[in-house]
Length: 50
Image 1 (tube, rainbow, N blue to C red):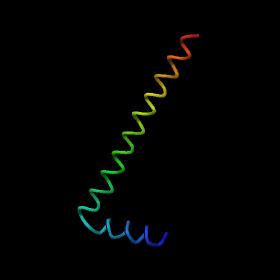
Image 2 (image 1 turned 60 degrees about the horizontal axis):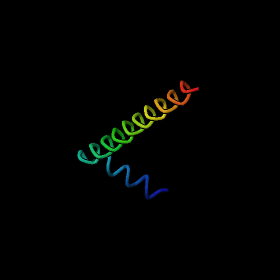
Image 3 (image 1 turned 90 degrees about the horizontal axis):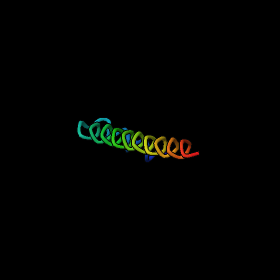
Image 4 (image 1 turned 90 degrees about the vertical axis):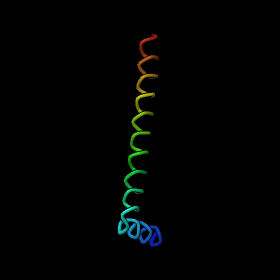
């Protein structure tokens, strides 16, 4: 766990490390929103078919 904290701290000090952290967060956030939309669309499709 300490190794992960040290790695994250080193990335935050570096300019490109910040871009990497922000970019990975943004990627997974948008990916999650897309999957949420897929599940909602599928759920509404199933509910409206009954």
